[in-house]
Image 1 (cartoon, rainbow, N blue to C red):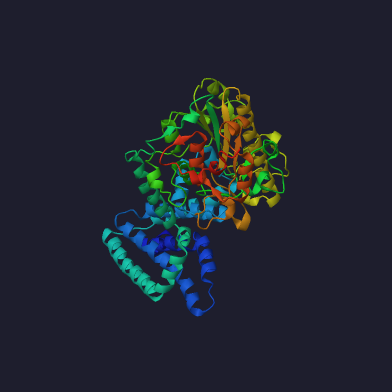
Image 2 (cartoon, rainbow, N blue to C red):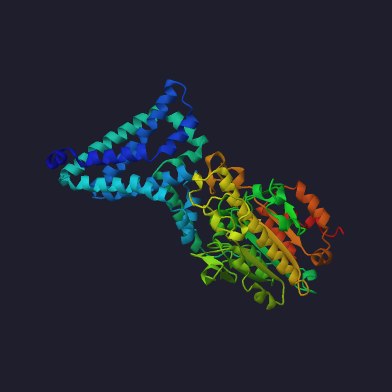
Amino acid sequence: MKNWLMTRLTHPVLNALTAAAITLCLNIPFFEQAYNLVHPDKSHTWLFLLSMPWVSFFVLFSILMVAEVVWLAFPVAILFILLASSAQYFISSYRIIVDRTMVANMANTTAAESFALVTPQMIGYFILTAVIPIIVLFVARRLTRQSTLQRISYALITLLISCAGTYLISNSFYKDYASLFRNNRELITYLSPSNSIAAALSWYKHERTANLPLIRFGEDAHQAAAHLGGKPTLTILIVGETTRAQDVGLGGYQRQTTPLLAKDDVVYYPNTLSCGTSTAVSVPCMFSGMGHDHYNDKLANHREGLLDIVQRAGINVLWRENDGGCKGACSRVPTEEMTSQNLSGMCIDGECYDHVLFHHLQGYIDKQTGNTLIVLHTIGSHGPTYNHRYPDAFKYYTPTCDTNEVQHCSTEQLVNTYDNTIRYMDAMVDQGIQLLQANSQRFTTSLVYLSDHGESLGEDGVYLHGLPYMIAPIQQKHVPLLIWLSEDYQQRYAIDKKCMIDQAKLMQTSQDNLFPTVLGLFGVQTREYQPQLDLLTHCRGRQ
């Protein structure tokens, strides 16, 4: 039996079987998507669709045979199998897109968030589609014996055959391929393992710009005289995480998931869009001052942003972190990492409830004598372990989805669990308002809440977030934004609250409004300030 296998299991045969297995077994989402886009209804379109696996096969086979010449075919095959297997699992389970942003999310995520994605189903899937095939391939290659001359000869012959096959197919269907991929650029992100490799290379090139010299921004920043006399200003900016506007009671949701904020006399902006669909994009974007249409993540990596300008104007800044990092937005201001404190009753297994952000915060406030901005970066409603985002006391809606395999929960369970996270967010933001009210004798106070992006809860089979902005569903882009101003702030700076409420109902707002609004709250004057985007501009001086 062994001799029989040795005569038939040549390296070209093993590489052909590997290429075929990756193409046909680990690219199912790609072919499903291609079928939906092509809509084959005649012989030509059917032939075009059937040509796709052959192109994939020929390309993979060629790469493996070239690698065979330098004894790297087996390591390359392992890499391809692992990448294709993992990509197919996450695409199929959560409908994610494998691109640079997703790689950035992986690189910037915490260990706790990563382990939250590990499920028995995922482990079983990887054993079946990656571990077992790799073991079989290893054993098979141990049974093959070929001389260097044979290996090189086979490589050249099969490479010529693969190139000829690829040329014939591409030449026959050039117009079809050009039209399909030009009009559906996201389709290529479904093709494994090229999607993971291209995304990783793109991320690497992007990260190289992080070490470029820092570009200063808003160097002329200073505070207006009206904000320098009298009581200092204290503002809390709460950056939400994965909170979608669709489930917020303030916006007319069928459930009142924000009962405390409904009593806090806040101004809610129901028509707010995010800059991106992931923290790695939205957070640096909203603090960059570039706006969604002109946002350049490479530039944002090495240019000052909102907090640099505010700090330069003489305002005390503190960033408190509970979500695995500020993505560069707080790189040059005082920062406190709350999860590292591992506070009993607030933190479990490397993750903390968002109330930890208020731990000893009063002590910090007591030491401040000038205008102060405190930024609280929450873990909010980050999935898939939504049930870990709130204490048992906030389990208002049942039954809940008490697993990280959210795709197996019913819609009722999943929505209930997510809505419980909104109830907890409501209590957390309300606590921030109560804290500001308790310090109203010493400070003129205000609060802003803005989530970084939204979330998909199974609508159209899509879960979590991070899809490319152009094709992402509205649930991932529609986010809550609210402002609370103390009566002292309204009177001191002549803010017409009714004007704000009326405008909020009609305005199309976005994360672009955060940068100028925060500058406006502190009276920071700089040529980078855009008054037309400041949410308070048209309601100042109207009392």
